[in-house]
Image (cartoon, rainbow, N blue to C red; front, side, top):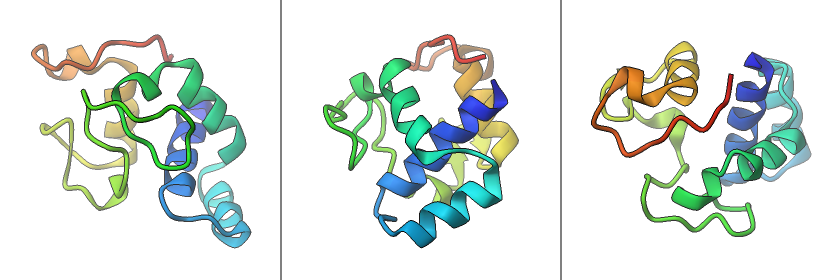
Length: 109
């Protein structure tokens, strides 16, 4: 399921202003993910319910932060330094990181 997380991450990068095929290709090469599968995963896991995600139909939630410029943020969830491993940890089980977070465990393994 680490690939699923990578797909979500790649899709987030791609749909947030990186529209060219070259960028998609570079992102896929760097992460081993597939931006197109990531878009599907974003919808399946309900990310669209809470987050605004440009380029994803129906992703206009206001509960969580918008998923734009994620790579440039210092912290994930306001508590973890922004690293790929910490993003995976956060997505898999946010309550384990911060019991008070509003982000639910959506079942990404």
